[in-house]
View 1: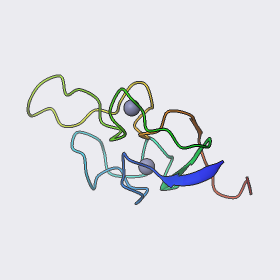
View 2: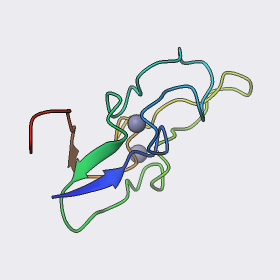
View 3: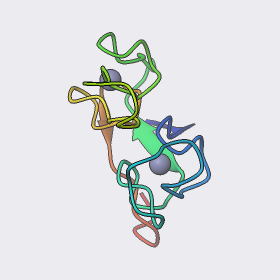
Length: 86
Ligand SMILES: [Zn+2]
Ligand SMILES: [Zn+2]
């Protein structure tokens, strides 16, 4: 496993920096951790090309997280939570 930065928030752990339409607060993809534990070798999600952003249904609606990777941008991952020491 390796810690990779979460694509949805760009590693900030915050929801509102890069995307609209989502309330400010902890990133929905990484639960505010800013990083994701990715199985090695790290594989970007092919659905979104590793951006974590899914197809926007209509202009002006803002970004939506990729369904395949939940916005993390990675293909095989587990969520990282503070304090679990994993
Ligand atoms: Zn995030
Ligand atoms: Zn994806």
